[in-house]
Amino acid sequence: MNMLRRDFFNKIFPALIAAVLFASACILFTQKYAISNKPLPNIFHSVDSENRMLFLINFYFPFSVSVLCFYICLFLRRFFFRIFCLSTGLVMAIIASYVLSDFFTIIFCTYSAYILISAVSFTPPRNYFLTAVVFLVLIFSIFHPVLLGPVTGGLRNIAPIQNELIILMIYFLILAVTFLSVRFLIEKLINSEATAVHLNAVSAKMLLFNHRLQEYVINSGEEIIKKDRLRFTRDLHDSCGYVFTNIIAVTEAAMSFSSMEPEKMRSTYQLISNQARQGLKQTRETLHLIRELEDPVARSIDTIYEMKSIFQEVTNIRVNIESGNMKHDYGPTVNTVLTRIVQEAFTNSIRHGQASQILIHFWEYPESLSMTVTDNGIGTQQIVKGIGLAGMEERLAAVGGSLEAFSPEDGGFRLKVLIPLIHDSIKEAVWGN
Image 1 (cartoon, rainbow, N blue to C red):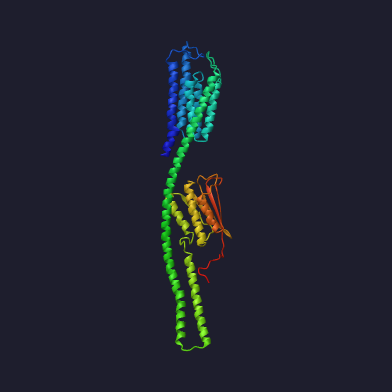
Image 2 (cartoon, rainbow, N blue to C red):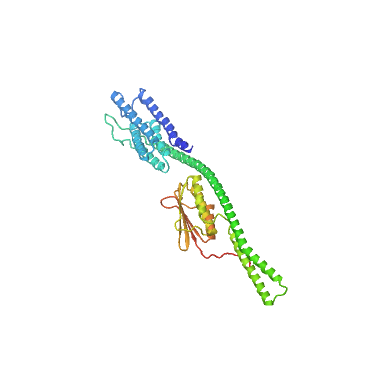
């Protein structure tokens, strides 16, 4: 729909207006010079039939070529061919009106068509430059009637009236500004509608992407939790069950004696205490593992690969991941940060960058892990930190990381993430001493 609307305003709209202008110029010339008995301009000898025919040919032939070049230029796609046709048509229009003094009728209609095509049919900023060039060429040709040299065959040049030429120049200037303004507003309108359509399409795709990702998280989380539940049950049964069984056995054995020597009683109590401490230690370790399962999916970078598959399927955007020398697991905290940043990078690439390809590169250094996300989108000259980038920085600040966002010289958008790796991290105890 936007392409049809763009073609209408860029081609059909100027073609219709130009048809009216060219038809008006041709009709005005025919009525005044071809089918009337009025004398020709004073540079011609109207009594001479050969001069009359030369005068008609001097207008109709270059005028026809000018009109043909206009419409070829309007519907061609290659820029340089369009410039050639525009230049040729402009020269032919000047030749057609060279011996005329009808500035506010024939010349005005013919020249206005070329101001129209240069302002409306070319895209910004080319149309600004071309309109200025066309305007200056037309004004120069009007103010210099001997531009093409004297005409042979007993013809004389016309002396233009300066006041009329200045008024005509003002009219052309008003037309140029008007047509450029119309082109600017049309481009804004079409781009706004295209942006709205793009955002709607992106919202639908991202909604589906998030839905599919949530399904993956739920299914993966339930599967992981199920496996962990079985493992924790087994560990608790094997470790704590053994310890508590020993405590019960030793206690019952001690109770079976009617009297016990103090030294042996102290040894028995010490054994029971050691067994209880060991059981408490193993229970704390198991509970600490359970506490780390707040995000059961963030156990490895497998989530990033699964996100890639879902994102490619939903958006048709190609994603390449180069894992380099990175490990499979960096702990739940770093894994979660990497996962969330990749998810936000995907969103930015399709929503703002309109990218078709994304490259994610990982590399582990001795004391840090780097992640670079590059897309081939439209990029940006000025980085505006919205919710997405601010959220990335907050997540990275929690692990001492840094974020750099910029558009490379070759285009697109790039995120560079650096996360320090702390191998001996301090872990909080689940229970107090």
